Length: 211
Image 1 (cartoon, rainbow, N blue to C red):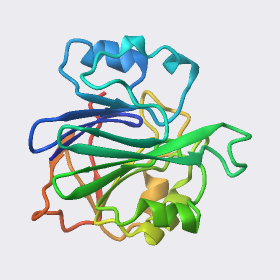
Image 2: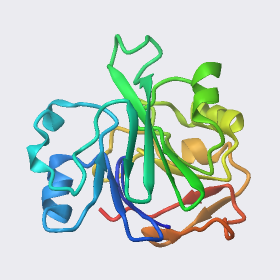
Image 3: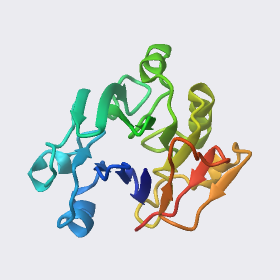
Image 4: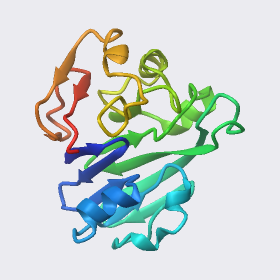
């Protein structure tokens, strides 16, 4: 598979058979970059007002913005209920954790998760190979909480997202997460290729964002 980091919580994930998955694009990102691209699956972890009208999405499979199980070509998807805060969504709303299964790999996108998953949620998620994890605090988990979640999930590889950048100056910097990490591979590229037999040696991979 190929994973490309676009910005914020938006990634493009391409399977070995060429199926393309786009995660949580804003309308601006979609129109600027993907409007004329071939995208098969689009998932949204939460429903901000700008996402209310999904007609701006042109994908082979209808946009996914609910919990449940989905299947398209070589990809199986499960959406798990969670929250954007520690008050069961009463402060910032619901969040969907999406797990994508293909190429004998489970890649899980935590979205705008705002709490440590319960034992029941962790059990439902199962063994995760690649974890896309928010770290920027303010409207999601902090770097410290992200590290605690990594210890609970113990993925083979984790890729941070939703941290301070020119488009998100209100979030914490990546350093507030990296102080807890022993080894991080900072790749000067927006993409990384991973397959079942060749996972990186480092547990944390920091991709350069496209924007």
